[in-house]
Length: 126
Image 1 (cartoon, rainbow, N blue to C red):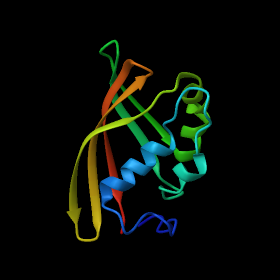
Image 2 (image 1 turned 30 degrees about the vertical axis):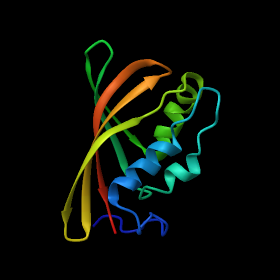
Image 3 (image 1 turned 30 degrees about the horizontal axis):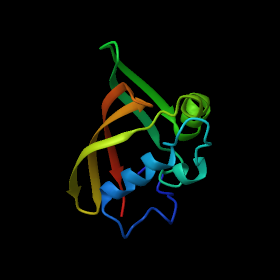
C-alpha cells in the first residue's frame, strides 16, 4: 500500500454508506453558506484522488480528477455561489475482507435545477 496513513476518525462504527453520506453532507449546503472543508477532508486519506465521471445537463460525459485539496480549491466558490448539493440516490456496498467498496448513484441540483447525475465509487477502510 503506497500510503497507509489515514485519519483516526473515519466513522469506523458506521456502515460504509454512512461515510459517503457524511462526506456528501460536508460539501452540500445552501447558496451562500460556507462548506465544512475540515469535515470533508477528514473522510479521506491524505493521498486520496477524487475522480468524477458524470453526465451533465447537456448530455455530455465528463471525467475530472482532483486531490482532496485541489477539489476544494477548484470548487469552493462554485458550491457556495450556486448552492450545489450532491444527493445520494442509492448505494451498493461490496466487502473484500476489511475493505469495502461503496458505489453510490447521485444527482446534483443547483436549487431546483438538476445539473449533474453520476456514480461515486468509494473505497472505505475499517
